Length: 484
Image (tube, rainbow, N blue to C red):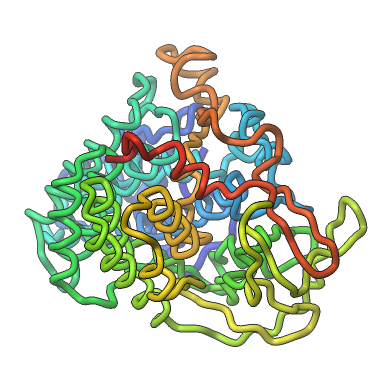
């Protein structure tokens, strides 16, 4: 199988990249760096150096990163409570986390989230080990960027899977080790180059990784270092309107046969990606504020936690908003009824009703945040009593849910991990069915069946069946657990 397969139409630069090297994958879809099929560019010519091959390879890695981020974003947000899979080509099991298996038609596909993340790591590793050492024109900045991308592949694997191999026929690496490998790549990247806003980008992803490891001190140190940089910082995964369309746009805006619909209380954030080439801001400064808030909460510094939460709110709500004419009537294709077009919404049967979260669609123009947003205000945070850590944590995870909406972060926060693809299990002698990494990991507190997406609507008020932020808080306070 050719690495840069034509499952999507590619741009002219892809032809250039293929002109440098067409890399073959083994049957389990890992890169085999010993086999080169392009007759003009051989392993020997790379070893000779001075080819300039790093530039197109780095372009290819950035392209693959966008594919990986896009796939993780749409699929894991459907698995979570962010989106309901109403009428798409996504596996119907996505709404039933406990039923997700390696044979899943989306996970086991050649362009699904597992495949894309593994290809990102493989291509980055090949570039680091074979291309750059033999390219006299390679720069320190290019090497640092490739290290960053490989670190992100490891981080995405650790956040979203129960374990994955990182080499052909290799053993399963557990999540914590994958995240430690990500940190090692991020450290090496920053030691290699500190161009432009690169240190801020690295600080944020290292804070994210240390948070996942439960290392509060290091997470806080990295988050504070990030805050010394550009306060509006974002790093996007970029797409092309003709050759590499944002999957979020395809599933949430091009609503023909592809139809995912948000949990009603998140309606005001949808669809976020209103253009075919809308970027996904995969690293952004809001993360630093939210991590510092979580560290402070874990240490009982409730006033400090509130300050960081307010900072996150102010930053998120300063981000751009576009006006989008949404023709979607939000039909429920399974029942023939229509979803809410307004009214109030409750986060749970015992939560207060809130107006303004559900926007009227069906041809109306609605404001859509493109980077971050939240319905919460500084006043909402200040109104929470300091002696109520459960409510503070519930609100923090609500902030995380809203601010990271449609960015592929919610499933991990819920405590759900995906299995690897079936082809990996079938072809890797070090992996057997039922072993770690081959089955979905679902926290015990996750509702059964598709309970994450359930709600009722009486024509005026919508009631969400379960407030998962409340569930998270109830399960992580006294003692404070996960991630710190």
